[in-house]
Length: 230
Image (tube, rainbow, N blue to C red):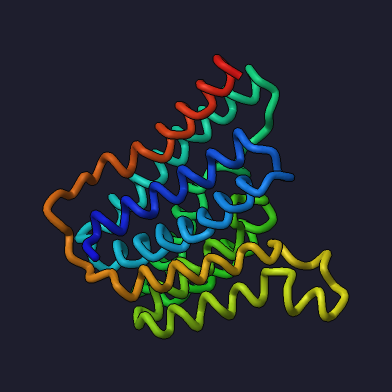
């Protein structure tokens, strides 16, 4: 599977996930089916960020691009809150977690060993700020970037899921309030299947800027349609 196809699958599953979140009632089967499919999306994008860190020739420029798009999306979310009243500020902008995950890798591999110490507060900060996916999301990127073997990626994701998902660990211990995600998040493990068949090749077309624009673009379109026609 080429990089282009991998990105298209990640984008499409994200679209299905956000469609369900915005338009469907949480007590419907369709809602949970689409959100279940969408669980693979973030893991795929996290993997791409980790891969991109090692392949890019200009890591600072990469960080700046993600930061710019995170700010642009946040401005849209602030505007949406001021107009519509729904508060998704920080909590719905996945670009912040992608940025912090990339930053954590940059610090870890920096020649100044003292900078590695900043990774821990970044992970904690992502959780305290209630960013989308929080510490879990930053850690996926961080571990995928450190351990590039695909079998190890499987183990890392399985371990993080065990630490952040309610079932089976926290429900067994009677500590469900500690868990970050419900059991449906275990479906994220299917992303590893796609990672295993991903060959790292660019494919015929790059569509680099399309994927940068897709995230804010599809959110704007979905919310515009909702507010204009529903």
